[in-house]
Image (cartoon, rainbow over all chains, first blue to last red; front, side):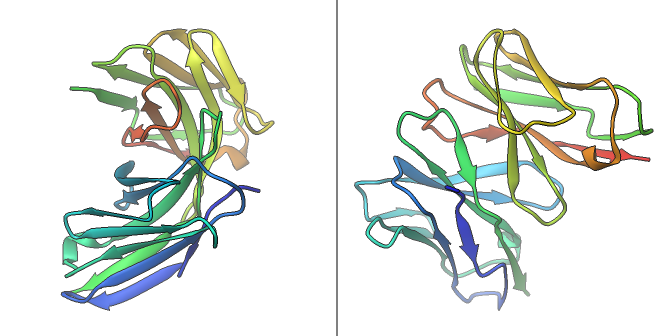
Length: 111
Length: 113
């Protein structure tokens, strides 16, 4: 299937450290998106990277995309307790009205 | 600005009872609308999506149905709930085109007893 797969499934780090999550997918994409979900809430869009882009920044977030390896990474720098959440990647295919979400990485920031 | 409303936040229903979850969007026209289900600690499973009034695409054969009676209203229904219908249901919208970011409601936690 086209589903993105995040790695690791769970990650615990100390506040102030950097957190890196990875996403792999299987076929050609139009874009790849990262979302965040606080416990019991809806998802919030973080950043979108197009297939012709290699890196994108937004505040403390840095996303890379390697289409040759069909993978993406999300880096959160200088983590804060408020960054504790689940993070999902989602891929968009050409000519398609839907996103396919991965299984997520549960990030815990230890104060 | 655009907002999405989804209700109720939690729902407890007996097996065999009907279901109706409603989602409405404000501040935009002709949105794509989506219903997802999320099992505990898992990713999102797309159930239905709609690109216009009366246009419903079903992703997974199941005990549920969806309808879009108005441009910014999306309804998830069931005639008889099963235990396996328990989960966290999320509604989302995106600008027409499908490749844009999706914006989610706060979800409905459905428990079937």
